Length: 386
Ligand SMILES: Cc1ncc(COP(=O)(O)O)c(C=O)c1O
Image 1 (cartoon, rainbow, N blue to C red):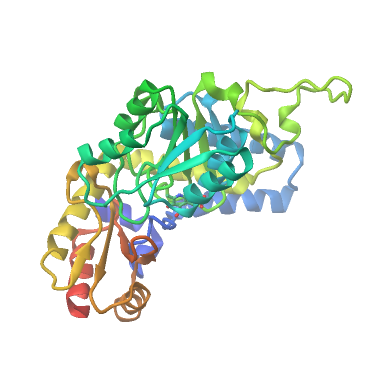
Image 2 (cartoon, rainbow, N blue to C red):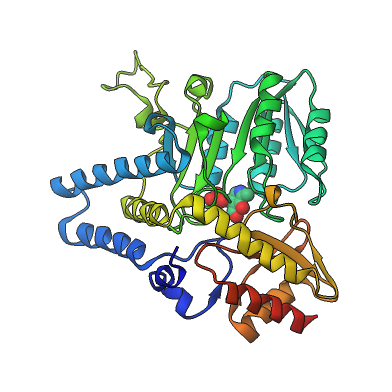
């Protein structure tokens, strides 16, 4: 991977040390250009002129194909959404729950998992069991804790594949086996994995998986994708609906629902300019190579953690074990509230990181375009604050 050459394609990297891809990735020039081109086309020829419409449909199909490639899934099993959370909600609010069913999640979750499971539980009279993880739990401990949370009523494990606040890479294949052996499903929030980890829906046997386009894929906010295992599609009913779910023509006395097609979840229109950018972003990421990205990000994270260990007052929340690690590294520094440290890193060094809530810390996102020098610079800046 020619990191310096790739960096030249991402303009912001010439100006700041960007270590916040886990929130929103910096778009490459060509991704911005794809967005601008579509906006210009609509500006000059009108959004619904015949050729513009045709190209729009082509772009939407390409967006679905691009998402399917990220998932390693068939296009029929993929829906282009607006973001990760929309995909989680489509499944959670549409699944054929029975009162008393149970969802297992964990204490390290992002609000999108936490609140979606709690709101679903309230509406359908379900129980949410929260597994209490320590970010430094071993693989065996994590699996043991999840296993202990199962009851005969467990219907789903619902967790992030990579936890946003610690970067813990959940043992998703093992959790999937655990769930399937007990007749339960697994839904994974892939907000931190699409474009970061090599995914393979069929090989891993995941049931439901949702990703965004704006983080590690380096697209814009407003496009995401949802995968549903084909044999489960008819079990997910419409919690919100739109014309795409109806087999035409519309006849009020005889509405035929298109229940076996992912299209049924399209609530209405979607943004073609944003999808054009998503298509370009996915091809950029594919050219870099997702397998290589996964290795490089983990190596950058390991380099950073090795330095953090030696800074007095630093407590690392991210796992040290490579198999449980990702490109996210979070930590705290004694005497510094995370928001104050984040502000100082920007003010003094033009380094962009963020604070995270639980456990409260500073989080650096390390993506393939970040350099070893940038990692060392952040470590040096933390030494300065210490
Ligand atoms: C684990 C996790 N889930 C969900 C989200 C929300 O993602 P989106 O805005 O794509 O819905 C984030 C964003 O930071 C996240 O880290």
